[in-house]
Amino acid sequence: MKSNLITRAGKEALQKELDWLWKVKRPQVTQAVSEAAALGDRSENAEYKEGKRELRSIDRRLRFLTKRLETVKVVDYSPEQEGKCFFGAWVEIENEDGDILQCRIVGSDEIDVSKGHITIDSPMAKALIGRQVDDEVVVKTPEGDKIWIILNIQYQAFDRG
Image 1 (cartoon, rainbow, N blue to C red):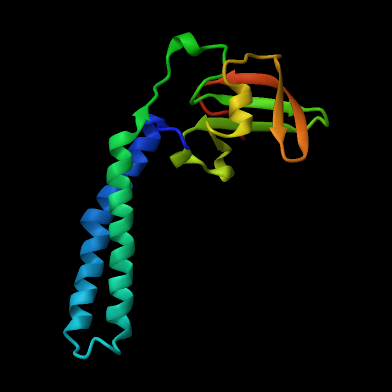
Image 2 (cartoon, one colour):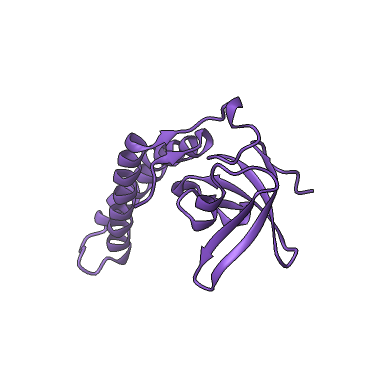
C-alpha cells in the first residue's frame, strides 16, 4: 500500500493537472465528440468512437485526482529535520563500488527517475529515513543486500551543474 505523503510542489502539480483536464482538455474533447456525432452514423464513425474513449479516460483520471487530492497529506520542511534524512530530503549516497547517487525522497505520486525522485515506500528510502551523514545503510534488493554511505543530506536540490 502506498503512502499518502506528498510534497507541497507535488500536490500543486496534481491540482494543476486536475484543473487543466477539467477546464481545458475535457471541454476540447467534448466539443470534438459533439462535432463527430453531428456527422451522422456513429456506428462507423472513428472520430466519435475515439473521442468517447478519450473522454472515458479523462473522466477516470479526473476521478482519481479528485479522490487522491482529498487523501494526500502535505509534508513541509521543518528545521528540526536538518542533519537527518526525512521525507523531502535530497540525499547523496555512495556504494561500495564508489558509485554516487543523488535522490530525493518524495511521495508515490511524484516519482520521476529522470529527476532523481524516489518514493518514500521504496527500499532505498526506507533504509535512509532517520539516518544522518556518514551513516552506513543496508538496502535490501532482489540481488541481495547493498551497502551505501550517506555523504550529504539537504532539503533543497543539489546543484547538478
